[in-house]
Length: 220
Image (tube, rainbow, N blue to C red; front, side):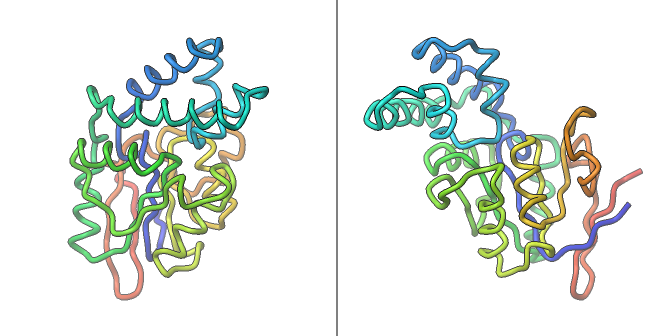
């Protein structure tokens, strides 16, 4: 199985960075604050912008309360770094893209303070192009984030490959018209048959640059 493309668009949390313990710890504190169970929160939040999740769990709150809670959670998530780590193959893959001068960007539902902290603390190379929560009006699963990511690379969506782990991000990439590589896509995931390549780790792929395109191959 091989995919051809011209540029790469990476989700951050769960794709390049293992931040699950930090994310779930911070959101558990949010749950205690607003009276929502940890399980209910974990079943909803992954891959989505925090402000949208806060609105979902605080439907009767004022905009001031929403904003105050968002700023509290953003500060919490951007200062909790213990346990953050690059996922296997992430740094090596991006180093290869940089060595081959292949364009790439990070497209995350996180804000700049959270995303930049997780990228720098884990040693992920800093991208030339970011798409963060501040850049968009509609977050994943809406296609806007990945459409903007392709635009920042100066490429058509169909010439980009999205790397994602969460359902919301996978749908965002598919609906943007990008090719999608899913890391750990569960068997029960709706639209699983639309995903172009499913891998267990970023170590599972190899990259070859040809004259006008990049070839992604699954190591078998």
